[in-house]
Image 1: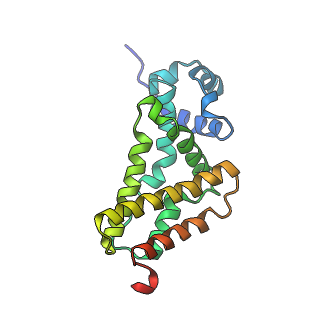
Image 2 (image 1 turned 180 degrees about the horizontal axis):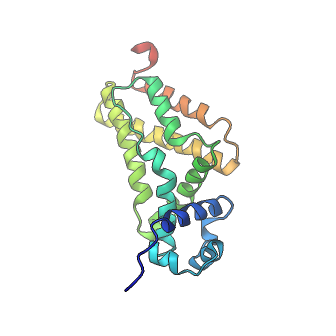
Amino acid sequence: MPRKPDPTLKPAIVCKVTDHLHHTRVEDVSVRSLGRVLGTSAYPIVYHFGSRDGLIDAVVDHLSRPVVSVCLDPDADERSLAEHLVRVFGGLDDAERFLAARLTFELGSVECLSGHERHRRVHRTHVDALAAWCRAHGADDATALRAAQAAVLAARGAQWGAVLDGDVAQTDVVLRGVARRLAAEVGAGVAAR
């Protein structure tokens, strides 16, 4: 009779690999090297995650959990929009949030080469949320979509610039500026409400 899998092993592997990725490039990670980090063979990785990519996806899921539940009420005011952008794209002074942004950058930039859609879907979700906010504040569909796309790109630019520069000090301030510009573009500024 086969042994039952240890239910604590999978989350422990994700946490240990997350710690490892804080100072390791994704391209330097293999199933074998992760086995060495874990002090075991590659078998538990393949058993629990199927592949290196499956394990990296599990790490991204783990790091993204706090952000996945963040929703933007389309009727929210500019301050709430700014807080939404900071919660989704900011907070990079936290090591876990910084790693999540870095992995999104590393994995998302080559996703189109691998046939994966994860980061592209998340990107579209962000655009859709901001477009709904713009429409709720009076923008027509075309303006809402264009403004939302530009705002998400600006937010990602602030986030990824911080990852590249290693300077996270101004990221949240920049994100609040993105919210201000978006609100002004659709006429939903604090003064207008």
